[in-house]
Length: 476
Ligand SMILES: [Zn+2]
Image 1 (tube, rainbow, N blue to C red):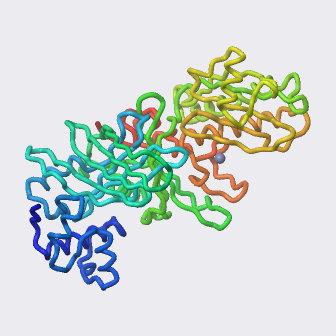
Image 2: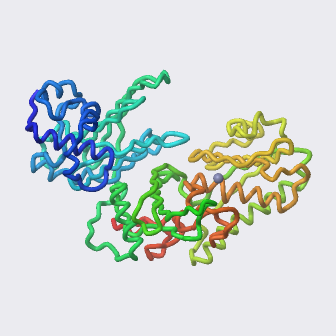
Image 3: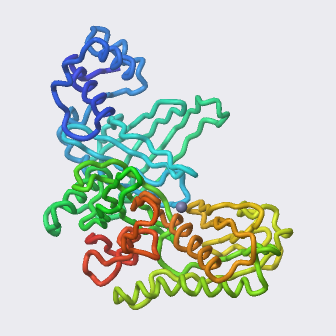
């Protein structure tokens, strides 16, 4: 095998790559090259070849990667064709195993981050350095890039253009005793927004401008006018708070790819980021509600009281829309309610049992976007449960009620179901607006600032971002 770089270059490349793993952001600091012996041993171990000894060629043959180079080492023509592959890519099929891929570039290095569509938690690859494994011979093509992830599950991924799309092949080897078979998948990705240049971006207040830069840096995506919730009063009981920003990228069906970041109030420090596939928080939701009947808690008029509460939920959304001057509510729940005796359901907390019970009573759950179990079990107290993005919601007897529920209790159950658990299906997390107890932050009865759900028109084109074809000031 031919190794094209001189020994000195290899030191540079290796040091930058390791630097990149530890601190993917910012330009490499050449002082990193002053590596002490312990660090050097670590570099040798982690990179699979020695950095400063003479047996480079020999060591390199032990490395799976045939050609190791940072982008700064690429031939000029190849480096020039790299930008099109950089950016945020989302899977063309929302049921695929990988939700999104960000190919990022700092001054001298390229990285990839991958978000797997795993349940219940996403399987996020931390930033990995990208290496060119096969420079393209065709002009305008970046060839093949490769990244690897070590650990109990070893993954190696190849990234390459396929026309306007990005193809990603991932080979996974399981060394975690899980018994899972090694596998190989190929998935196709597209850019959700056309790449935009800095020119013509709207001028934003300082913090919003910093947040916009963070989207570019953390996701490789330009969000010209980001949605921001930044209220100093929003703190948890340890007085910790943050700025929250979200961006919904609409997908076919009622799915969206949701980008989220938590930052310091001045926007300068990113403390968390996440990509997930969620149900889009807009539209008419065909909702099947299974109310479990218990002699003690559900009176003869129980279902009527619950229907009244459901009406109020729809009215909450209608009132919000009227207040903003929208022609129609952004969210409407079209409910089908059925009352099922406890004996007719295996376990109300298992949505498969709830669906089966509905089906056995002639209501097929197919075609419903949301299935909600309302379970006022007087003997077992429980909170709510939401498993996004399946559309399955469970609301237990969180009020510890043991006698017949009156209107306030049914209303409380409806609010937990629709304003809280359903909001989780839309990607909402309790930490979007931390609070300690009952602090009112002004967006009640909703659980989060409407701007974070795409419900405000922040780019001034008359459409709230969640139903806007050019959301967040994006131009197409
Ligand atoms: Zn919750």
